[in-house]
Image (cartoon, helix red, strand yellow):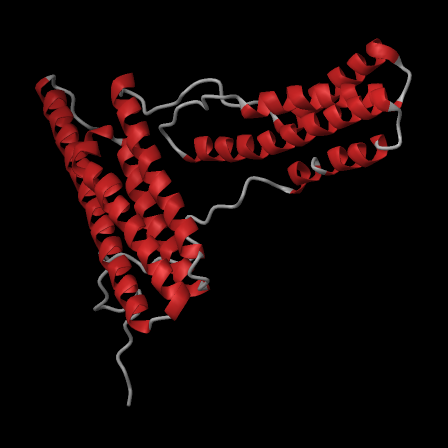
Length: 294
């Protein structure tokens, strides 16, 4: 039987309805790349090479390997913190500069490794360490050194928004960890879709902190409940593969996503209403001052 076309350009299509969200919307690429992972190779090589050295060489080699390994681990955390900072419009600077610390550890580790493997002395080891630290900073950069926020918003409001968003992000990260125990890629993808909708709400609040009062319950209480429900579902589904539990959990995600999306749309409409009022006020003022468009 023939069916009426109901696509985007159909006369009866509802252009105000939100488009279905793709599973790749707001997809986040892990900022830890091949180059940073490659930094775990030198400490392993240095450790095994140092085993054949004398006691002093072995000591410096093990210390150097430990410093290089710790630096590589700190660099991974620093890159993730940098990516999170760049993705948000309101963010506090990292409390601990991991990338700078990683460069310092790399310099000390290379210096200790040089002392373990050669007779170049402390001066040569120091020069090698300085060059290694400088190259590390050039390759991976430094940590953000100042907080950033929306223009025209005081520091107190920005701090409140940043704390609430951090709390919400912690709940979303916990959901990711919990749902991984269910070992079901489709459900994990569905959770990611809900997380993208929740992050849309986060970004909207960051752009206008006045929306925080109305959205705080969504970003804390509801997400905490979603995290707890995810943990309970993962426990049940990992053991029994209960289809009823899966359907109930997916229905919960649907309800949460619809409510989060509705709250975001409401805030955007309120922002647009405020803009319309400001435009009307400005036009009236121009008219009173005798300014007319050509």
